[in-house]
Image (cartoon, rainbow, N blue to C red; front, side, top):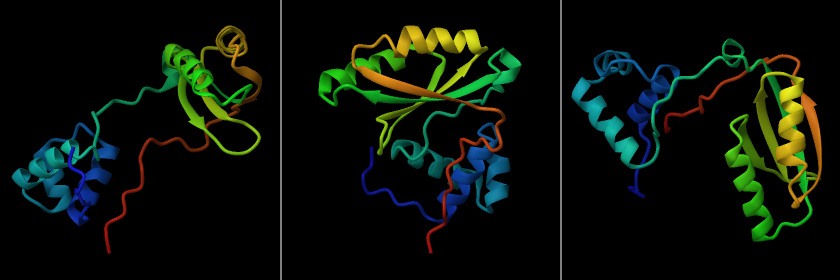
Length: 160
């Protein structure tokens, strides 16, 4: 991975466009960012090598696949030692309903985003995967009523 890679204006436009539609043909992307297809292809490869761009994915609408409930669980650990953190990470990595986990500051240690089928599914994940961990002291769950804004796109500012 290149450590000296710099995002220029063209790379910023390419990255922004690819976040909206990763399946866009390079020729169409080139026209959109006002460059040649060969240049855009080379810049994409360079950004992949530098770790700026990762694998393209297709986003799934959770409600269309029977996962219509979002919840966030705040978790407080008993200990912050390496073994406790590793046990927690192993448990959350193994649970497909857990789609995001953040180590956070404040009164709680982690914020866990779950996408589940229903309340029974949520209860199973919480009681059997989170609360049962020896390293977890307590947890508090927030239920999502409605997704107001949801995006995976990261703002990519053009350098000034």
